[in-house]
Image (cartoon, rainbow, N blue to C red; front, side):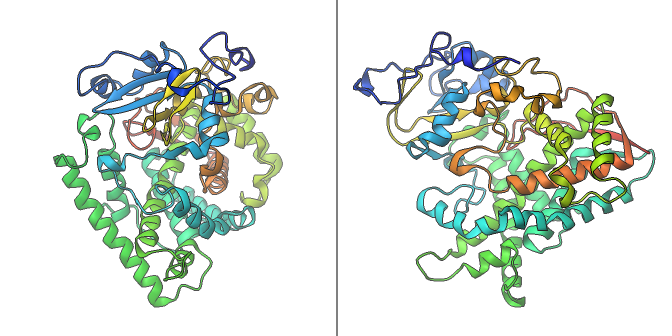
Length: 470
């Protein structure tokens, strides 16, 4: 196991243990970070569009703090866990969340996902009771029931398109468990399904138009706006229906509706609506991506499947997998963790500097957009032996103690860590356990798929798996 200790002494990659403006050195004396050359106006945009992930191979040759630009915006990539920890945790108040809303990518601007400051804290307080450990455990029955129904529909020899099957399954679970709603994700007319496609198309980093300001009209923007208008209408219908039938339940939608009003801590109509808009999309999309890669990797690793099934036999036995088993499914957890290391569903976080700061001996001017690329850090050989290999045991053999904490952060970190982390983890455990007890897996698609560069790290082409009943 490659330890991070030898890389944090300031001798290799410009890491400055004393920086952070704790000394008397004026911030203006720090140099700007190095970075790749670009073109006038567009900066490095063509390099990013040509190869959004390979671009970071170029970036990394300049160090762990690297500046680049895209169409007038200045970015700085942070490629060491210590710097990620500073931005997300120890100095988080010096940075705000950045989600490209100024480029027209509005996925619930007034909701928890995209808000900051007091607005974010107020909303987080309203929603936190829905995501406590005990409440998440109570959703286990819904998760197990839907997973059971899905696998009972599959037969020996069936070929499933994993990315689509798990998207439908996780959307059904999310809608029922958190919002007490029924949706039909098998229909192309379903507004949530169409919105997910539109959001991913609009956020595609392989299209130069993605990086143009929101006031520049494009065909993609017009399609996005029409689809999102339909989606918002659907969301408003759901909210009004809940008001009409009574919002006295303990699900998230009822809690949001009850939180509306005119008081100081009340949620506005836009906040209620935007939270439903964002949660219905992000709450299922990320889990479905993680499950798709988990099963793709398992289909290639018989020894891992054998170990996983041995654990299921020991922990679950003849019972149906449920929340009561989840704590003891340690190897199952390691399998999912390792899959998200290789393929983090949210592959990059962005923050914007609220003031001039210094990181790694370099000056980061106010307004700079900081890039925290999970997909790069999760495969950094300084922190992982054989990072391209699928090794679930690396999470249970004690070696992770030698690794910096933020060498792995699929759910973000600090105060802004994903509120649905426990929900997603339990959901994925129960789905993996249910499927593996009933089927062997045969991967029919590329074992090393091309990755889409949209809102998630999803596969660019469908992942097809043939099922063999056990």
